[in-house]
Length: 415
Image (cartoon, rainbow, N blue to C red):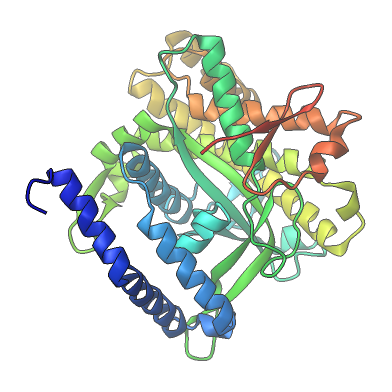
């Protein structure tokens, strides 16, 4: 290898490993290790060995090709923040609610947990949220017998390309999130049944509310899970990391600081507001986009009832949180003075609409991630009202996204 450049030597060394089979042997060892961990965790009770070997092989591939960099770091922080905000700060529930007539409803419990690499890459699910609802809900929705609802979140960040003209950037944002919302990358029929537009499956789910005889959380697969794309601006996620998180050397991850610090940050409060608004808009969209061939099934009825509960809970959550979010923003000086004055005299319902519009229109609080998600969602709602809607509802492109242009379906190709 004398006379070779360092790059040539590196390539030659790699080829040598390939020829001896050392690289493949290392991969096999890693796959065996992942398979053993799956068995040790008890997933053999849910899936057979053949499926677990497929999962172990997939996870090894995903992990070895995992991209690193700023965007990935922002997404990891946002995922941690999402779990913390939902489970500890009550973004989606955990608070008593007093309605206009003074009636207090029971607490609405929510728990969020990150998924395995397999569900992350295969089903595009970063976090599974389990919602435990009270009797006041289950009495009106007969399919929610156990009082629990699960939903899947694809947590993402996005930063506007400042080199583009505003209108071009707006189109790019909408198309990116139309792709995120619609893309199907689920398993083949060998591992998963067909699911409707906007739904997915979660193969590795630990029920936070149910334990077995040994005290371990029950493991099972979830089918027909509504999937929501949620996120905030990447720069905002980075600011949240700097102000509200610390690096834990033991786990090698960023963890939230004291609850008082996190809860007092206007960016965190606003992130919770955005997440609820995004879920609300997509829950309404999924109810409208249900393909006709599913409409008469029992699964469809159960899915629609769960979406209705999610819609109602997100609406209540926005009204509950809007005043506190606006106050923290005003104290930080990031809420335009005129908007702050109008919000003070507005009803709770009006305040929610005003803040949502501000996030899509007002410079300074405009969030390209939020705006892109909402615009893409509105596009699919428009499609649902179109005579041609069934064309898009029936599309199940593998690893491809779609967008409704107003007259036709546009196929999207994003990496």
